[in-house]
Length: 486
View 1: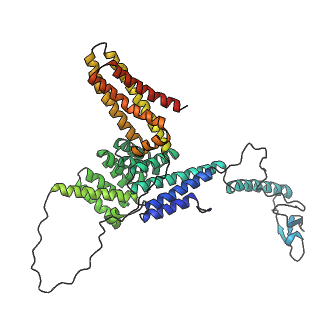
View 2 (view 1 turned 45 degrees about the horizontal axis):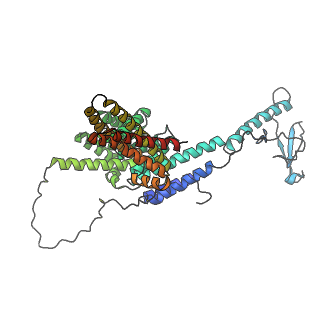
View 3 (view 1 turned 120 degrees about the vertical axis):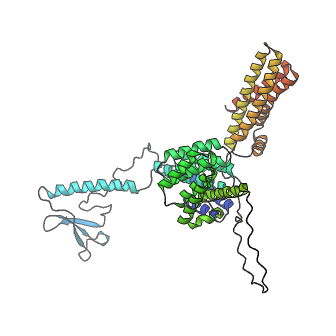
């Protein structure tokens, strides 16, 4: 990395690489930018409690004396003019030579009072103001540097999430978006990319909730309204999404993307007349909308996303109609051969892109926490179900076995689904990392998966030893997690 390269420089380079479809190199630039932010955050800041106190007169112009030895007036000599005012004689090198001396009146005449006192008060006020300006224009404080670093990190994480979305890697995009939201909880761009990633990972309920939050928080923001409406239409389409799309058009009637979003939401609701009018209005405002689905990069990620969605809906509607095309007029071939028309390039095929091959963010800690949570939930659920099953044996052995089989299967299914939904990376990669790095936790996870199956086995064969074996496995998994946290 170049020594003078800032995190924003890396982000701009990533945008350029993404515009060329080179998403892997764009992700590498983001990784370098995040490393630069981490390096800036590790720079030691001056300690406010240090014994060396800062000079309170730093940045203040000293009061010009008879012959100041230091400061901005080191090369000048002061004297008295013919009218009794203070004048400054400036010479080269402070020699005060008559050939190079320039007299400069510094005091202002006043209507009443002592001129010297007025001059001193004015100089003190000017010095105070200069001190304030010096503090504001000087080096950034620790808090300002921390805020700038947090802003750079948020921008880099949002850009990384958009890169993964464009590269069709929603799991990695969600991991980056989650970190961006944690770094800047109340900002719009992290929420937008997180809602997109949630939709692409088929977590529609969370995506719809987040889209509704965007619409409520920024009711007068054109970008927020149209993006929230489109995201709500993707996750949970309905009248609410249509109302939000109309509001987006009302807030920004001159923006083509607002009409494009209205067309997409209307098409999902099978309101094809409204969708056609909205798309026509979008084309009239910006003819480039027609080719937006073939764009590459992340600068216009939302436009490409909505355009592709509209194309897919239009194709689905045409296929669903099932109306064969009307045959055109049949013409006789001419006797003279016609000149061959130049073939037009096929723009329908999207350009080739290179997706990121390796993860940029280290999510191993989050995956390990997900494993621990899965073990705890699974073990606790198995223990509770086993205790209830043992209590039911006092009433009826048959009822307890039926209950054990049903609840055991449900606990096993819930643990598997929770584990897969909680992870932000492939399950196989997480299990391989556990087997190589933390075998105790891996064994505890496998025991948690096996413990509910002993409840199913008890339903089949009966016998308290089978039930107790499931309880022991669950207790071992819980004990491993508790000891590993200490």
